[in-house]
Length: 176
Image 1 (cartoon, one colour):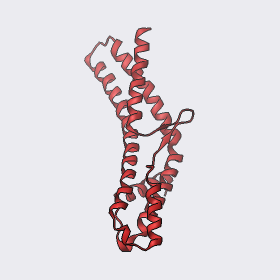
Image 2 (image 1 turned 90 degrees about the vertical axis):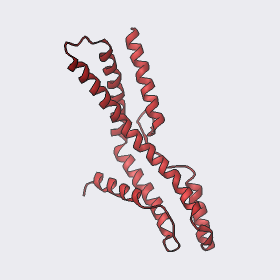
Image 3 (image 1 turned 120 degrees about the horizontal axis):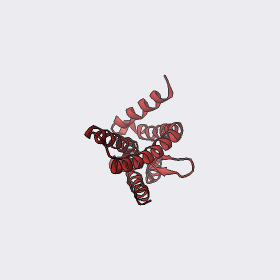
Image 4 (image 1 turned 120 degrees about the vertical axis):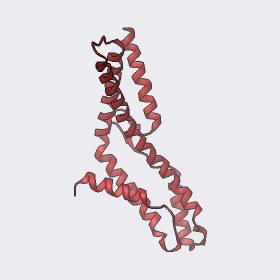
């Protein structure tokens, strides 16, 4: 089994599991958290450069497409439609990478809440200490970062920043 299918299958399977802790499954939340963290780390290491190149080239291409769309004198409406479709494709390409990075952040924020809502106080003292420790660790959500020179998080704020930068570059090209 190749690395991509193993990592993605493992992550998907773990995200579908209900993050509840019952009396006989207290080991599950701890193993789930640490296994998921290591899988996310491996996923990030594997695809860091790919996502960075993808986002950067798509952002530059998005700016170029907007410039061409604004100043082209097309012979047919099909040409406008083609440029518009390409621009939308680039937008969605960036959006989906950053959207799923944002989903990882949101779901990791829920883990601490689920642990707190469980009946952790009915567990032995040693387990309560472990649960408190995990709750402290979970205060900082899991995040994926990409980049080589400039590192940025995979979230929707980055998507907004990319759109603002592309629009700024478009305005610079338009005014020159």
